[in-house]
Image 1 (tube, helix red, strand yellow):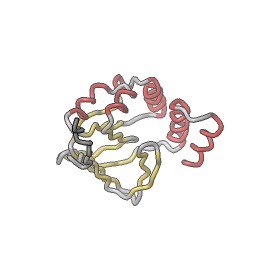
Image 2 (cartoon, rainbow, N blue to C red):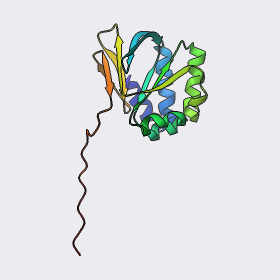
Image 3 (spheres, rainbow, N blue to C red):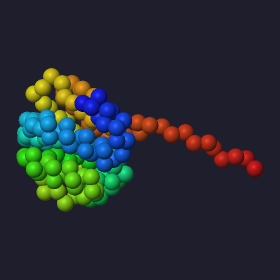
Image 4 (tube, helix red, strand yellow):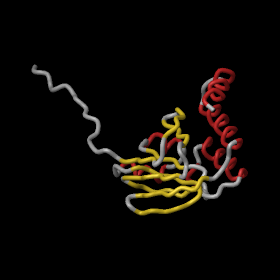
Length: 160
């Protein structure tokens, strides 16, 4: 998958539109629903989905037109999006909305906020995209907000 994506980038350049086109082509070719169990802040739900999207980026949500979920980020939580029962046609429509930054109007996405999320799958490994890079991870996948995980040091005031 990564080789095909890089080859396309070399031919057509690196842009958001090219990235969407490559992703769409790969997803349609390998389209399938997965049975998962989501544990969202201690509440479990079993469902079938093609895509789970977890974000801590206000910018990313705004770019996709998911402004309503920015409140999750502002309150220090994860923004979570899950697709349900997408046909190939619905997946095309969802991809077009993403490219246009209009995902908020998509009826096939369930959205919510959480401090912790665990995704359990009946697979040995699962392909996950993190910041544009695709990696294989071992389930269960655990997401959590770590408060004060990064310490920022700023210079003190200068003496005059």
